[in-house]
Image 1 (cartoon, rainbow, N blue to C red):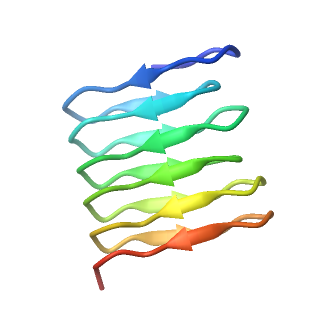
Image 2 (cartoon, one colour):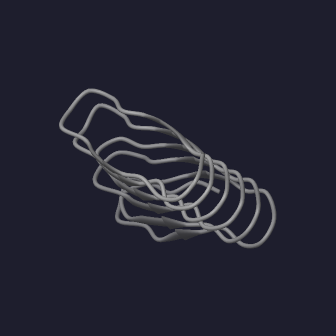
Length: 102
């Protein structure tokens, strides 16, 4: 699924989704998802599953699962939540909140 240049709401359902956000919220359900935040200030919700999330100037909420989160060039706010997450901060002023996990 792919969002365009306007303000989109992109929602993936259950299962393993590959989502490319535009400008606006990106939300997936359960599954091992690959999510790429597009241009603009995105709100990315990974939900349950082992997700790979790449943000730009975004708010990322990974929920449960062992997630890989890569912050982009902007000023990101990242919520790792439960699970054994790997979080790599990018350039910019990032704020990272970690949850339970190893």
